[in-house]
Amino acid sequence: MYKRKCMKYELPELKFSFEGLEPNIDSKTVEVHYTKHHQGYLNKTNELLEKYPELMEKSIEELLSDLNSIPEDIRQGLVNVGGGYYNHNIYWETMTGEETEIPSDLVEKINSKWGSVDSFKETFTENAMKLFGSGWVWLVQSDTELEIVSSKNQENPISNGKYPLLGIDLWEHAYYLKYQNRRNEYIDSWFKVIDWNAVEKRIRV
Ligand code: MN3
Image 1 (cartoon, rainbow, N blue to C red):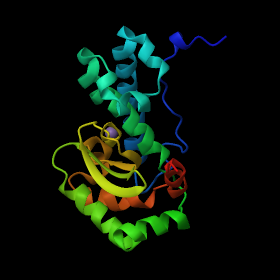
Image 2: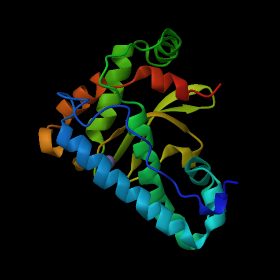
Image 3: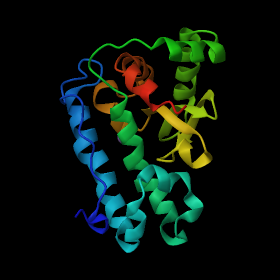
């Protein structure tokens, strides 16, 4: 019998090799980002929750969706390291080395909100360019509507009732080795490795 109290969160497997996103995202960045940063957030999340093992019976998504239910002494810690763990899960899940097209249902939703896919990309890029400090920009679902929102540090919009479909990591560790200060090039390149089928699968009906 599987004992849930022994459960720890795990690192999701990458769908691609470290080289798999080349030349858009370089292999060294993927390797360090996944094996050091993401792994680090995971380890710290598991450590943080050792004190409250009953919380481990819930998914990280459930915990971050309901921060008021988290004991106060670990609440901000969970936002920081649990958010870091969850954000990177989504980041890798919605990337691929294969070129994908936006499924037509999603194109329709994007068009009805932003007028066109190009105008969506433009708005998303503007938000990503103007984000100050470390954080993320997200495509989220709030009720049935799509929205673009930013989050600082490792916060996730799910804590504000908005479900993340896609997010770009704008911490410098996500792009500095290859792009240095050229954040715009990183954003353009990231758009080329989005797994739109994975994004669509995240939509909640
Ligand atoms: Mn990161």
